[in-house]
Length: 180
Image (tube, rainbow, N blue to C red):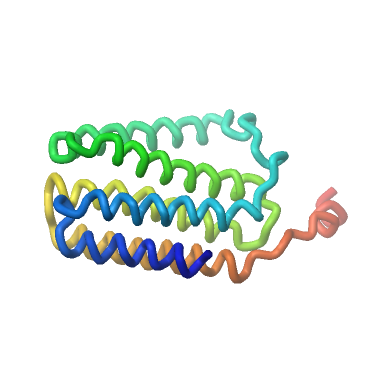
């Protein structure tokens, strides 16, 4: 499933480099496929007991969530005039990205695996890439943004891959003996 996930990302990149606006529906399809496959790949690292909304109640996490929601709303509002024919597709892309980010965040908060920070970095890169890509292609094109998007995507893929290669369960018995 991992190779298909990476091929979906490569397909999206090919169509982005050809013409973002003309091929947006294909790009969206590839991006949605990529994020759904990322979630499916990540599901073996999370259990139902790890999903607790009480973990979101700390003030720094609530502020971070509000800032991320505001940023997504602001970018969507800027890009909306350009993509008004594809609003449903944009909503599905954003929903799949949020599903991936939330899944990664819960895995990070559960802290049951070594190298879980790598998955968190990949999720942060996904937020950065999708936000900047929309602005770069639809609102204000700049080659520096393109370079930043490509670098962030490379970093995100690198850390996502490293997480799956190096993730091992944390030995909680050792931590309990040493610190409690």
